[in-house]
Length: 52
Image 1 (tube, rainbow, N blue to C red):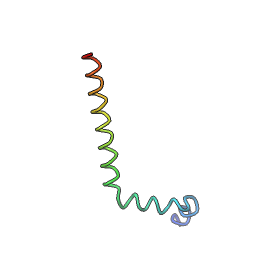
Image 2: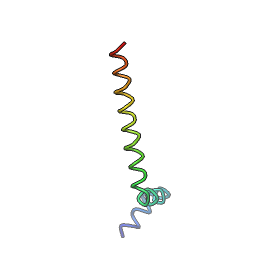
Image 3: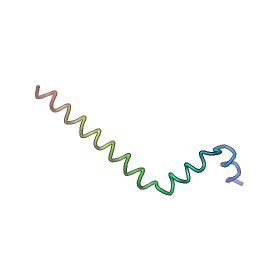
Image 4: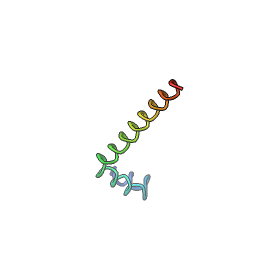
């Protein structure tokens, strides 16, 4: 019963959700890695600005 409602409400997005859930570990690792790099670069830019 729930699958019928999800298919109706999400439509074609249902397949994308299934793909995401199957590869969730990879996607989450990428997001955390990008966030860590952004924090590192922001901290480095702040240090360079303080030194100048």
